[in-house]
Amino acid sequence: MALPSMFHMHLVSDSTGETLVAIAKAATVQYQNTRAIEHVHPLVRTNRQLKRVLTDIAQEPGIVLYTVVNKALADELEKHCQALKIPCLAVLRPIMQVFESYLGAPQTPTVAGQHVLDADYFRRIDAMNFTMAHDDGRLPDNLSDADIILLGISRTSKTPTSLYLAQRGYKTTNLPLVPQVELPHELLEPHTAFVVCLIANVDRIADVRRNRAMLMADRDLETYVDRDAITAEIAYTRRLAAQYGWPIIDVTRRSIEESATMILKLLHDRKAGTKPEPERSHV
Image (cartoon, rainbow, N blue to C red; front, side, top):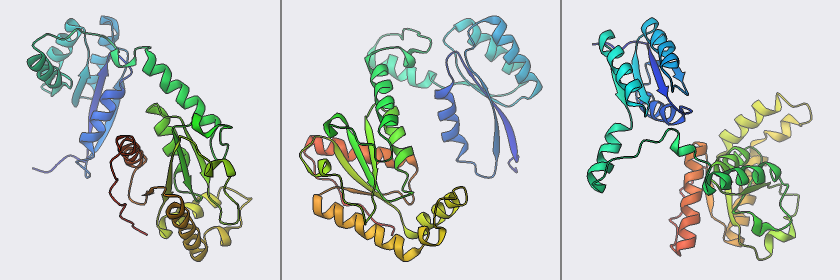
């Protein structure tokens, strides 16, 4: 049986829907020849709100995934999908069943419990504010105020990786590496921040720089994308890392999320006193 080229997918949540979107993405990427048309329905907490969702589902039926704590609303949603003969899944139910079985206690239903305004929430907000204020070479006066410092030549994904780490609650700053420019002296003095160097292979950096330069009139395109110059910049990064004992992460075939996860693993290994495995290079 041939797979459809596209299908509708309704994500129904009584919160922001972020959990559903992440789960749905993890599933749909396994079917690269089929495109999911996402319909995200957040903050569904009343019968009136659910009624509008049910109308949308009836007009464009497809897979329905939901995270709705209110049992009456969840039952109504499942009843509606059963009548339409379309799949409907409470994505957290299997996980909650495992918890209940292991802990020997029922769950306490909490709408948007993952977004509670607790200390961890404010820690992430503080990290995000810090990271945005200390982007692209704007190092803090005291480097120990940062949890992580990312170093790398132009177009090695320093800023997006910094922002992702901030969302995880880590105060992150980043510094562009330029062979002709000396490192800030405070970077070489004692501090508690975890320094990581980012690199990528020549082809990736040249391609990204070329696309970037087309949008910027203040770049010398020929020099900016010169492969020999980029090779020298990468070699400079490697020399610095070797000289100061900073770990290197090759982002060539890694997403921002994967790079950040690797950085956090290295950070946790350092705190635990574990020697990290050497990075395999794609350069």
